[in-house]
Length: 202
Image (cartoon, rainbow, N blue to C red):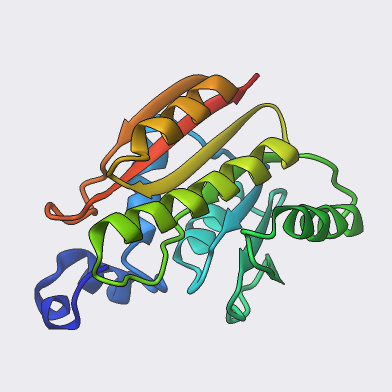
């Protein structure tokens, strides 16, 4: 998260404003997709912890009219054309999976091609605690992804680096044929965040 005092000089924040994205994090997903090709036209994408909607905007642009994007967050997300919103707590995994499946069925769809998550805990300033909360959210995102994804589906999730990072990476690696960690250019140099990419659910 960029401090308000840094926003005036943050080039990705200024680009987001100029290009109409809801958040600077939109460029993180664009850079991930450019490198790993995790989202393509026609895909069904679930965005977990989606507010304010920057990643959902990018995903909708990538999947096009034949694709579908479902945004999930505890907060009410401002409506986006072509994006379905669900208000749900992703740590309540079964509840979230049920809600997503209901939306899929209502649109004549079944399984999901991609699950993405840029969710972050409310920061306390205590590094170890914030890392553990990040791990819990990322683990919930992984569990939801495994429940919803078709075989060979793709997954992207943010986690803060720390004691539980290796465990999360290993958990993703066990579920996907290809796993990599990546820090997009749009991530701040001093940030503890890293994105784990899983391709090809086994």
